[in-house]
Image (cartoon, rainbow, N blue to C red):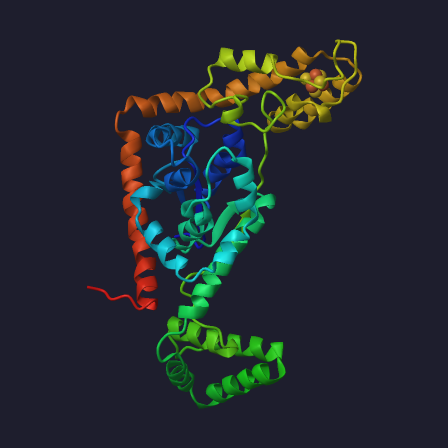
Length: 400
Ligand code: SF4
């Protein structure tokens, strides 16, 4: 049983490219054997911006999941599911909407930014504004404590933490919490109870951090208390309320951002990507045609790898010796660009060959991807329902 739970998702964009693989998927694959991982197809999120083009969503889902599996996600090690088949995400998003101030959502930096970037679309919708709320629900409905993000995305998690904190603040106090805490203190026994009280007073009156630390140790070591009572007494020390929805933490992950064939970010919509399913001959053709440092107009002109998109591929696919060869050869015009590209072509094709073989096997089994998703959704519903029972109870909703 793993201590940490990870949640991460991707919008259904169809076939994955090597940018997805090196930017996220490889990391997901590594994590599945280290933590309890939930990976989902964010099809509701896709509708926040593509609500007017729904036909592609389902098809893209199956293509994308086949690529995930081909790349190495193992449904026996992680849970792979479809967001729209786990209604608990929507329920929690709705309930969190009751307590989330509108200003918090309007101030999310990507809200204005994306509206400007996608200005051909009318994004003055409730769904688009509520996107960070749904994202928060996606994470905390699993009580996931780790969310893999690159360094530039750490701030995106802040609103999720704020919403969880607000929820715990409003609903976290159990009925009769103080009475129960007093009873638990008595269970410590005369001497320990007295010490606990005096440490608690020293912390609350004088801010004595050492006293707080000693009190926590005393509680944790107490043999007469259950774990729930210990948790309660630790919370009682600082006046903290019960944590119903834990605040998620960023799991900083190494991400490589592959540059596309034309020097812009690798993206399907720019048509500058190499798909995981790209045939070897097509990889060769694309990389050979790839832009290089514009200063190398002729074979005899020296160049600078830092100004060349091919270098970003070397950074991912080449070892130090090869990279040194590129730097030396490029800056002295000792190698030509086609010569420089050849080892990258070979490395990409060597990486893609086993992935493509697995994708072919997966797609040869007609319902395999659907079966993986069905099993994942069942597991996801089971886990999220546990959270939702606590949330409904905390918010005073009746059970029938
Ligand atoms: S030699 Fe390599 S790094 Fe230098 S410009 Fe050509 S492709 Fe780019």
